[in-house]
Amino acid sequence: MSLKKVKYSILELAPVQLDKSIPEVFESTLKLAQEVESFGYSRFWLAEHHNMKSIASAATPVLIGHIAQGTTKIRVGSGGIMLPNHSPLIVAEQFGTLGHLYPNRIDLGLGRAPGTDQVTAHAIRSDRMQSVHRFPDEIQKIQSFFSSDNEDQAVRAYVAEGVEMPLYILGSSTDSAHVAAALGLPYVFASHFAPNQLMQALAIYRSEFKPSNQLKEPYAIAGINVIAADTEKEAKRISTSMIRMAVSVMTGKIDYVQPPTDFDGELKEIFEHPAFQSKFKYAFIGDKDQVKAKTEQFIAETGVDELIVATQIYDSEDRIKSYKLFSEIMNS
Image (tube, rainbow, N blue to C red; front, side):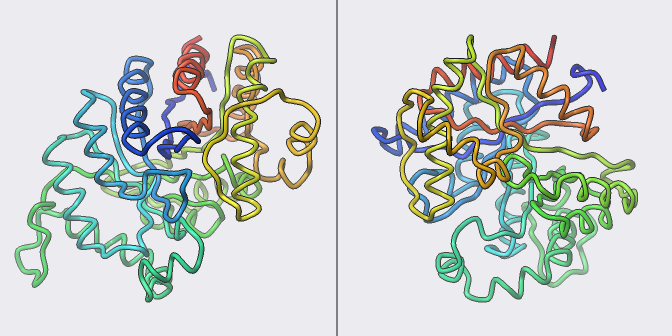
């Protein structure tokens, strides 16, 4: 499949750098969205995470509204809302409101992971495990709240009824592939940090897919990490912030995004370690030619319809530059 036929989007976590305040992070996130809007990216999605000092996208719908207000055409959405943390009614009301404020620009991506550790997940919603098991049913509740045919329902999300709100199912294992296929919804796989079941999940999704009112044929999106720069040496240098961030998450010692250092010694050893590679198999780091080759191989192997790109880079200008280079790759 040609690169030009594949859409490309951004997954943003509003990363908190070591020396930045939260207002500065939000300003940087908005600036990034404004810049990439002109680079041809299809969507700018924000991820829900909690109790992580390195991530500022906890109140995801609020930040979606902030980004949508400051941009004009790029789709803005959730990658995703972790549904077991929330009431389907409240999600429908929040996104129905966003849909009215920014018509035909809002996406609702839904996942069932907690987006945090188990202690925090319990603090968010003590009965969340019941909701995890009801995930498909709760998705359908949200769909019904957006329907125009709710006059006979005792509970209605009036602000959501009739609003165009495309739903996307997120997953990092094969479980959600079955759900997305059964409901006939687009499927987004988190291969940027959980690559091992990607191919199996895509196969399940495509083989079990049932057409729906939203989607007639399977539509698959997969996550990759991209750190692009003018030279391989520079790309590797700025990738050290991502490596340190990944190690902090894997060890449970989450820290702020750290400034880059030289890519050598211990960091090189960590990056090449099998345990690290098992999570970051699809981290494409290098100059344009190197990233293009890896991207082409990924698309050829997966046949995905769209890429969603995560970029953990310390300096905001370096992040913008990386996304610009990637957009040039996708349009080459």
